[in-house]
Image 1 (cartoon, rainbow, N blue to C red):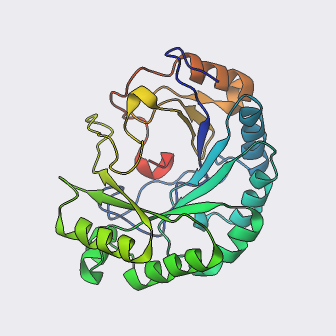
Image 2: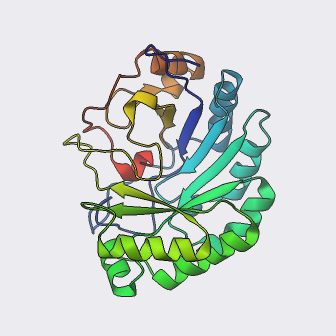
Length: 266
């Protein structure tokens, strides 16, 4: 699939829930957010139907996101359903890692290839301050579990304020190098202000080569993170939503006030 700017679109990010067991300062307010009703959230069958259609048109890379995807009941079953779609070359997940000790081996056996794990600090107190409810030891155990299960390569996502020379970022980098993991430094962004930049160590934020579409947990197909353009797969059907998302994918991001990181997956 190609958009109107001749960018090859082969990457679908799927948010399976807006719920999360952390309250990271850069993602949501401390008191939490109004949550989608269960009725509004896509069923596994709806997710798989849209994904199968997208794969038939050229999508070959799929990432499961949230919220925190591992809090979605039955998530291992969804991974298996997606892994069974012929044509997906790379099936991955972004997670905060806290629940990986419980799920890592089952996810691998279900067909998940690899994980990106959020890790913003190596100091327990700093980690607690940033996540508000996270426990660093649990996340480190989750990283170990993913490594042992073979969810490789493990990539660590580290949010930074100014640059990757910040104290917390350097500590995460040192940990990654010691363990043989990759690290991606993501500048703190604002959807409403339109502030974003290229991810260090990754391709995110580079509009000229953007190859992705995003499916929200309630069925909106977004062609751009920093835009309020979206198409309901329930109202329009998957075919029409995909066609419109491709046709109207903007040349570059601007701003968005219609969604947040916790419900579109970043």
